Length: 327
Image (cartoon, rainbow, N blue to C red; front, side):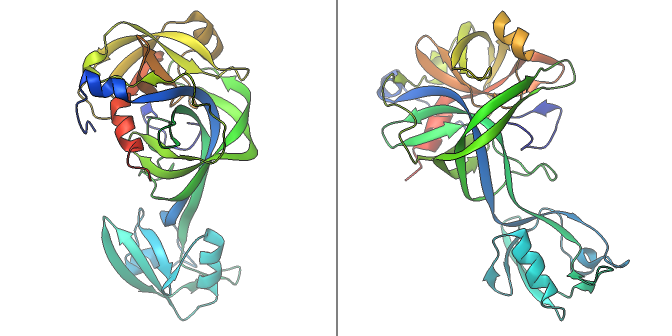
């Protein structure tokens, strides 16, 4: 996904149960492969950095840490960075911060410092939202849900998976593609057109999930979801509209099936058309559905930085379990 997760050596990207062949045949979804804009709003404000105010380290003084999630200020829910800054400045005698840290609730009373620009500050850099481009993996007509990305959305500064309050997927126009090369993963460059097509309710290690808010995807052309034991180390294909004109099939090979909970497939792009266009896997292709023998087996998630024709995929059987938790 474009500039949403932190940059690590392997770029973005539970085995909860084992399907029987009969069960897998009963679960059918519509593979999509459409690039979309993704916007999410965090549950509270995430502390992503700190700085001194007039030479005073306020965060250190009161024990506020990077990765803390500020849920309330003066016992009021906080929804935006602007609201946070305004409340701090209007309370020079001090504010009460309700913080979530490692699943623990902490209350910190902190007194802001008057900065050189005559504004009271705590010296905290906080984030309330993030956005980027990714790919929808499938639509499940049984409960009007969708799955996308195949990996979670992490904060670009802290690397932690973001706790989602709300979010949307939107139609987008692909403007260009920056090709991947050894050591330099490429990316899809696009612009949101503003039309919301789905609402995000889950941000997990194996993708984002939610419900469709319009009739963007048809219920026709469903295919079964494969169980892990039905997948072979052989040819397959992905669906992607990375070129920006229409969704197309591109040949790949499944090189290895692993026991990793979120990187269960090692894949290799073999289609010369896709390699010529993108150099292999690029950011924004995360979520492209992987299909083998007429079954959805997974979604593209990560690219190997030193060989962008190869990457990881997550297993579809795990993604469908997550979809089934959506109301």
